[in-house]
Amino acid sequence: MNFYKHFPLSKVALFGGAVAATAALSLFGPDRVRAALQDSPKTVLDEAWQIVNREYVDGTFNKVNWQATRQELLSKNYTSREQAYAALKTALEKLNDPYTRFMDPKQYEALTSQTAGELSGIGIRLEVSEQSKTLTVVEPIENSPALKAGIQSGDRILAINGKSTKGMSVEDASTLIRGDAGTKVNLQIGRENKEFALALVRARIELPTVRYSLKQEGSRRVGYIRLNEFSAHASEQMRKAIRDLTTQKAQGFVLDLRGNPGGLLQASIDISRMWVDKGAIVRTVDRKGGDEKFTANQTALTTLPLVVLVDGNSASSSEILTGALKDNRRATVVGSQTFGKALVQSVHSLSDGSGLAVTIAHYYTPSGTDISQKGITPDVKVDLTDSDRQRLASNPKMIATKDDPQYASALSALEKLAIQRPASAPQASTLK
Image 1 (tube, helix red, strand yellow):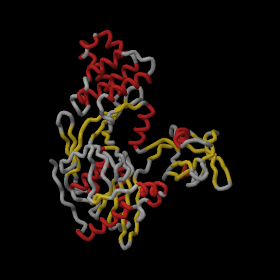
Image 2 (tube, rainbow, N blue to C red):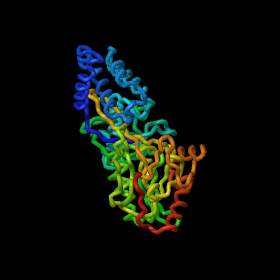
Image 3 (spheres, rainbow, N blue to C red):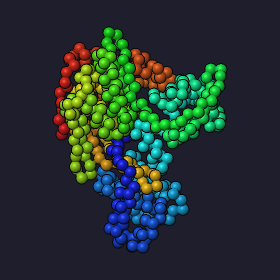
Image 4 (cartoon, rainbow, N blue to C red):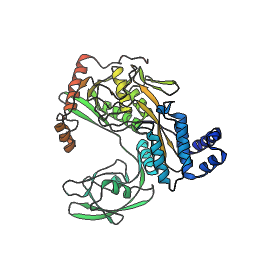
C-alpha cells in the first residue's frame, strides 16, 4: 500500500457534497437530493462518491458511469448503516480497483493506527503457544507499560479483566487489552509454576517497524536492518538504525524488505534519501497528467555497500525504495520478483468514523519503468522452495542466517560489492 496522509476531511467532503448536489439537480430534482443528503447513511455515501469523483486516477472511472452510480446510491432507502456500507462497497467494486476501498469505522481505525505506527494499549506481542495452547507473550515492546511492569517473554496471559483466555485467539485478546490511554487493564499472569495479578495503565505506544543488529559474517561486520512497514515512525527508526550500526563499525548493510507491504509514500521517499545521495527517487502522475518528481537531496547517511532483500510480498513503498536503490545503482537487489503495485492511494475519513482509500496516482521508478503487475526483477534472483518457506516459517530464528538461502546470497553479493568498488557516492539517474 502507498498512502498519502490526509487530515480528517469530513467537513471538506460534506461541503463538496453540497456543491455537487447543486450541480446535479437535473439528475434528481431538488427535493430528492435534499432528502437524500439529510439521511445520514446517504450523506456518507455521497461523501465517498464525491472523493472518488474528484480524485480517482482514471478520469473515465475505468469506463464506469460514475454519475449514474451516484444516482443509484442515493435513490435507494437504507434500513441500516451496514446496508448503506454494502451498497457503497458494491459501487466501488465496479471500478475494478482493489486498492480503492471503503472501510467501516473499525477497519479505518485499524488502518490509521497501522500507518501511524502507534497503538493505545500496554505494548506486548502475543501468540498462542503451540506447546501449551495458551496465550503467551512473545516480547514486551520497548518503553511500554508492559516492559516497565516487568512482563517477560514466555509469560502466559491467563485472564484479562477477569475473563479467562482459555481458547481465546490473539485477535480477541488484543481487542480486550487495547483501550484508551490512561485507562486500566488487569491481567492474570502465569510464569513458570506461579501466578500473579498485574494492573497496568494503557498508554500510546510507538510500534517498532525497524529491527537491526550487527552481524559478524566471517571477517566482515554486516549491519542487518529489517523494515516491516513504512509507518509514520519508520523514517526516524531507520535513521537511528543506520547511525547505530555505523557507530558499531558496520562495513556494509543488508536491508531486508521481504514481506513488507508498503505504507506511507513520504516514508519511502525519506528513507530513500538516507541511502541515495544524488538522483531521482520516484515520479507520480495523476489523472490530469500532472507529475511530481521526488529526488535525493544530498542527505545520505552512508555510502557503504548495500544489498536489498525482496520477495513477492514486497510491495508499493517497498518497491519505490527498491526501484530508487536499483536504478541509481546504489544497491544490489537479491531475492524474488516483487509484487508489482505502482499505484498511490489517499486515505480520507468520513463523517461517521468510516474511511475511504482512493487511488490517485501512478508511480514510475527513476528509469521511467512502470512496474504495475510486473514488479521489480532482482539483480540476483533467488526463489525459496516450498520446503525453504516452511522451514523458515517454523523456525523464525533461521531468518537472516546462513540457513536462509536469500540472506546467504545477500552476503555473497555484499562481498562482491566490497571487492568491486570502494564505498563512494553512487552514480545518479535522471527522471524520464
